[in-house]
Length: 446
Image (cartoon, rainbow, N blue to C red; front, top):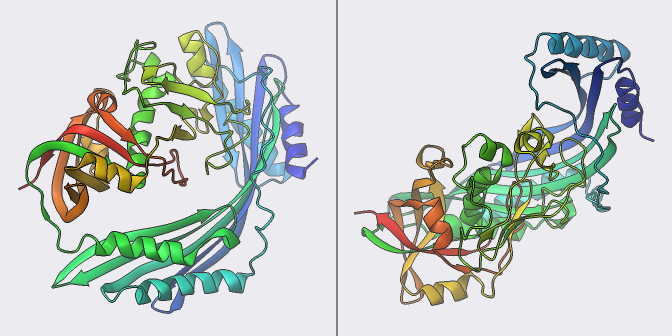
């Protein structure tokens, strides 16, 4: 048994009377290297550890919860944090739905998220990879005017969740990525772009992939013009499709549903998307960088079908939102008392990006979304955002476009999906991405 697990068990074991205790202990290490103009601009290698304690007190009208946390793991810090959490609970407001998770009999999947290659690179290797990424990006195209930053990052983390109600789990994972931000220049015009390579270990990363990605994304936008105003088919590439799915995910949170803040409320069993649209939340899939054997409360992760063949089949819940809705947790607690999707993915279609472009014939490719926070309302479904991208003419990519707004509603967009790609890109964050084509989008440009 690890030291942090032993510590968590000791703290949770101090629950008395009408009190329940939940402890989360986390530790980790990370390396971050940023190269700029042929030199190392930033290098950090750090370790961290800390824990948070939640104390629940049962009362006549419900429960009260107090929280405290600290970055130290010594006995004095533990005692002080526990006392503070108990004190905070006494002053909290009672809520009939508040509760800690109890073991529900679902076994956590046995998934290994620690790469055996994680320690294969030395510190010197990591630094050289960042420097090589900058060199390769600069040399890859004469139009690259500047590499704003070339970055190598890796991390290893471990966490334990233990409660006085019987939750007792430990997880570990590793990850790494290369990223590079570029500015391309031609005929007095600048365009920015970025590139990525991700993996579970630094030795899995590709300098060539990240550099090529950034070069393409910045140079293809040179000479961008305003698009004509029209109604047409929009093809979201894998990165922007991932953003789109992340936006939709908030409406699939059971907590948002019970609070009346979801356009999906009351629609389970209804047709809400095109027949080809099947969306699952599956943190048990180790290909997803958000994979984990347990959720933020320590309950087992599980595959949850949300939309199946276009029909809304369910929502995701943590313990509290499930109690409000009169159902059971789906293993979707996020830390911080939030309920949400954890590892979204669409079931793939039959074609890749290029084939879908040919099928669409006339339309617009969406390469970036801007103004998402102000232009999208996940409660009403209103959708109006700025984009950059490429026009599609006669089944081919045509001129780049900028200063363009696309608009519809999320409800309509789901029903208007006409193609889903097989080109899944596993990305850091909430949702994997793949090409999605959506018809009847309003484009406002020149």
